[in-house]
Image (spheres, one colour):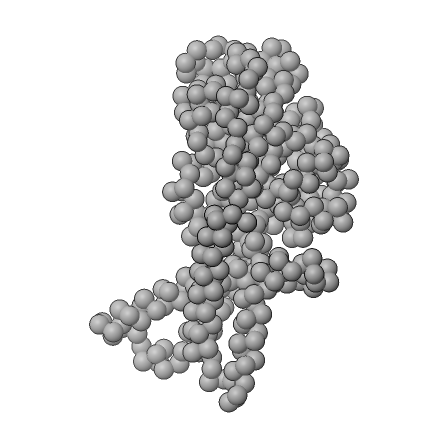
Length: 396
């Protein structure tokens, strides 16, 4: 483990521990009067188990019985979401109490009955969790209609379906995968693209649930292609290939003699460092033909523009997954969701299908991306490019 990892985990555990301690203390202040004297140990034991369940499930799953490790991971995943919203609401409440010292606008009944405020907070957070869990399991189709001003031989149109950030594992299980495959096949794609984080860190659930057989059910004219994201384990390369998914790791392929598909590797797993220069990856690509690239990480976008990429499809951001983290992704990335055009270079960024950590989404909707690409063959700067038509269809 290098110094970057040590710093990251040190900061993470400090913040995580502080946030949980704050929530635990505020909860005890609200509900302690309902615990008989000497029974506070029950409250803190339950709270500590909740707070540590995700970490215990993830780091000790190889040493715990399979069912127990999975249960802790699932409980802990929901707790991560609950912790986030509890912290935000409690900070808002405490800020309000601070202002009340000067303006005295909080009714005395509320101040004298902290358990009522605590109960309201718990009900509110529970409602948000229930909605977020439902929302995460009901994706929509987002449709783009774009033009690439290049000739693709005899090919005038290309119907692409892209699904990023599936995160197949214990939570996004084989049942969810089968449903996804049915939706994708119903779109009758020419090309299926998986722009990273297809598998969630371990191949064990993938193998145990025989997801390879499910992926073999994907149907398209020109095949299915994937790149690695920051969560895909190296072992995923072989099992995805065996499942009929061609994995590009800084590679490209000319498809149907009409266009190039380029796939960039994520690089170093946590930070995306150590990636090859795109110019090196694309050595030998005939840029007179359309060039489509899948790259999990939507950063350093000028590189794609400089290298003559016509369309890039990316994921990674989850659009924050939980509000208010979308406020951070908007600052971290030039675009964290949707469409962006830089000259002749067009980019589509997906917020993804699955989830990482909390199996909920609040403030965004999981999606399958459908792209109709029209090749005009006119060439030249800005020739033939029109702003895309984007449609979001109903829940699946």
